[in-house]
Image 1: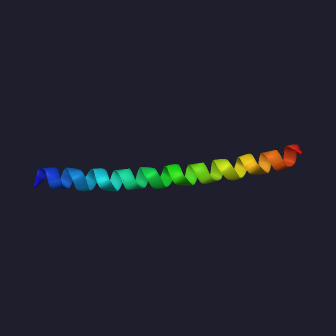
Image 2: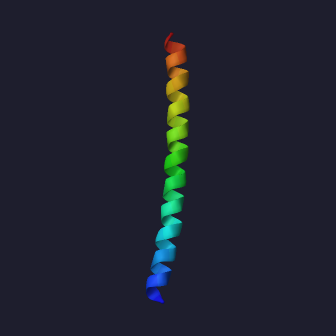
Length: 40
């Protein structure tokens, strides 16, 4: 049973981290595009 809880916990943490990374990447890309637009 303990292994099941561990896997469930890791799954939750993993999905949360992936979502955070995805959001960070989106924000970074948007900022980069905006910056390049201003530079022109």
